[in-house]
Amino acid sequence: MKWMIVCMLLLSGCVQPRVLERQGIITAAGFDKKGKLYEAGSVMLSFQTAGSSMSEVIEATNKTSKGIRQDLEAQTSHDLGSGQIRIVVYGKELAEQEGIFPLTDTLQRDANIGSLVYLAIGEPNAKTVIKSKKHEDTPDIGTYLYRLIEKNLRSESLLAATLHEFIHSYYDIGKDPVLPCLSLRDDKPIIEKVALFRGDKFVGTVRLDESFYIKMLASEYNTGLKNITVSRDEVAPLLIKKKGKKVNIVMNEIRTKRKITLVSQKPAPHFRVTVKMQTEILEMSEKMKPIMQANVGILERAIEKQMKKEIEQLLAKLKAYKTDPIGFGQIYDHSVRKLQLTDKQWLQLYEDARMDIDVNVSILRTGTID
Image 1 (cartoon, rainbow, N blue to C red):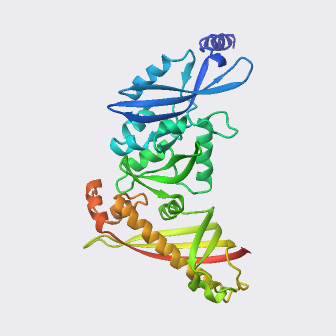
Image 2 (image 1 turned 120 degrees about the vertical axis):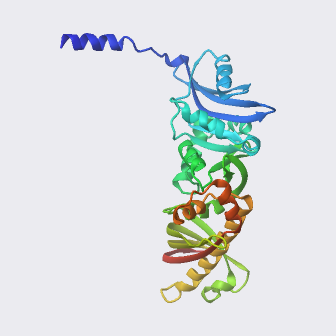
Image 3 (image 1 turned 90 degrees about the vertical axis):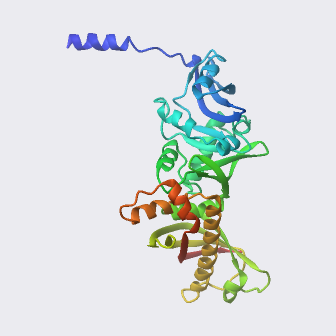
């Protein structure tokens, strides 16, 4: 027992003490391209003797991310720690021209950085995003960006945006990554779009309302809101007034199940996409007659028709960008026996692939009618 106590005392004496005031905690990092060099900035949170904290952005330029780290260390008396990094932002030009895999690969090889760190694209660049001074009541911009993405992930407006998910999608044959796209409005970072990738290169964006369908088709959707605009003619029997062309409907508590099957593989891949959705109507822009079991089908069919149209438009856009975030290639690869699909082969097949969409909507409850 005495020997155990002595050993514990000796081991505890080997721990390197860390003074809080000397620590510089990196909460966010941003990377852009400057000629043949990387231009990077890190958000450093430091603590004062009075108990308060302050954040600042320190910048460096180098050929490699490790070289950047050394340059950053030379600019501060604080001991920089990356164990609390929350988000890494990549500039749009860097992601578009060079790709971000070399930088993400470095992150996953760093034992101090967890695989759940968020990744994002900065528009027009990463520098302007992480240097924003508007971050509400959070202590630093890194924490604000983390909470911004986390909130939109909870509401299921975004697909998973972690380092782990990006690397996983990058290596998967037949599925491409997506990341949130951060831009500025009145110098405050916001999420208006989602960045699309082919491999590790940025190829385009979709709006958040379009990202809803990517999320719905890639996996089950179990919460959130969706605003949809239907033709007045489609719901005319329910309307009290007959003027105007469009009716806005807000759906809430959305629950979906989707099934994607390969119908045939020749002459080109042919998929059938079936979506079953249960929802409630939270709000409608027009005064309507009481919606009963006998006439709710009119509203359901109108929503189905519009959603099918919007999904078809989204899939056409994704094919034009030559990106497959939904994973049709994965389904094709798993459905065809003894096939060793490559990204190049799937890109050629994807161009001519046919997707038939079937949407079935069940309205469980109706809510406010303006």
